[in-house]
Image 1 (tube, one colour):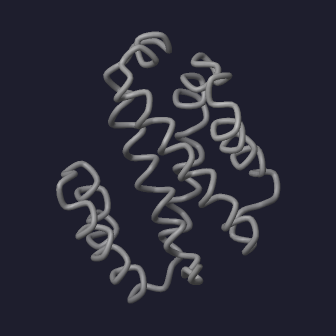
Image 2: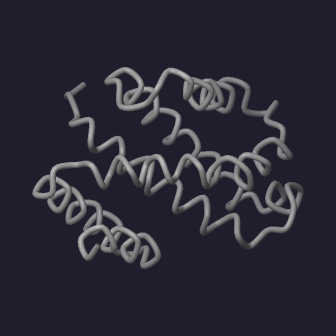
Length: 143
């Protein structure tokens, strides 16, 4: 496996958060989200990405060890898939994701500007079909 630049994991987490926010805004409760299998599976996959990215950010000391709970949640999702509590997922979306997003945004803002622009361009290209992601990524270039 090739070694990825740690900054890529920061953007992976950010894009995953944006996707969860976009998908979950259509649902007013956990059961409705759960019963829309495409949305549920998408949200779960994005949480897996956030957990994996967080593992690498903790390892590289970009995130404090207290964020190990995110990695642990990812492990539960992957290894106990049918044991996932929909209310817990919905609660995390509505109560924890915003705070984590703020931390990730701060990390992006602290990336050296030339590298940040290069990464934004790459992620914009990879997500060009997702206008809501492209708009949010381009805000870093304009701000």
